[in-house]
Length: 423
Image (cartoon, rainbow, N blue to C red; front, top):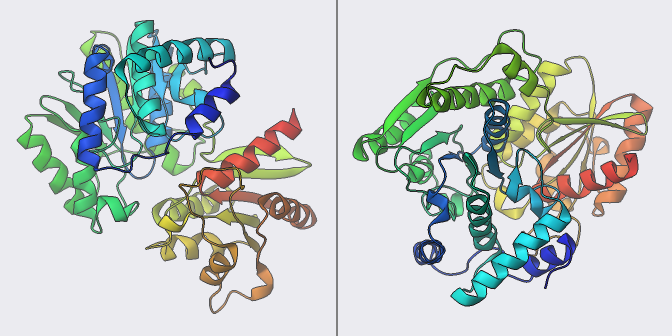
């Protein structure tokens, strides 16, 4: 019996984080489990979101916009940033600890009957579908965890499902492939017969892959040419994510013969704070920005966004990366570090799951150092909390912005401490 969310997280952390077997056979196992549970994933219309960059923000915007139009919406984010309860949100709120534990225990009882050996990811995905079906929601918004074709979320086969594909770039290449067409093919794997696919126009090699999959499955593709909002204060990449979300929600409204989103609803959604996505806060007089930019594409976008929003302000950078992100990260790493007044390479907290192997801070420091960037502006501090303390002191002295970025794990750990101290 689970009595608290901490106990639930401890239970989940004792499971293997990712399945170690063949991806195809594991996906078949998930399908079998869902079938035994009555296929909850197909009981509610879904908006399924895949992509390399922007899928988390886009999913947040979709869930919030749908809620503003009066729908009761379930939302599953992957990975979560603060608490595991983020993976089963309803009306853009986590369950209370008591509610979460009640559902968790009921689900465990059902799993006991099925006698399934699940990984952390598989458990949380099936649990989210199961809870949402129990609550008889109007819509669910599901963020893909990794790739698409073989991802644990790729079990939604309801006719006419809405699939969103955000910007595609290089990430998880050991699993998804080493070329953009290969990676795009994995992302396009979420497309099924008669679906509607919505995306911004991307490079011709990516579009060719998506169009081929859409044609093969008799799906419908809507391509957005505009990614800007009038008079918006959002940085450009968030405008791009929000315009995609707006198109998706307007499709839902059109299908239901409802009026499109109003300017008021769109303006209100621009004010929401998305955890770890260009998230701003103030701590001990220092302006801090948190962003989970953990691949080259995201780091370059973050750098461009900082120059756009803070063109005349220096920033101190704290960064940690997982070892799987080192390949093809040089462009993004150069971009984000070149404009920083001081860079501290650090690590994850020792409390995080062992499945993620971090880049040693000294190795990361050596990757950052290059001709033109003097060593006195770059250092490595293994303890992330000591790295944060030093960065805060430097930012205070320089009146600089403090940027914390890289792996979800370092952003999560430092974000939790910052918010805990500001309460």
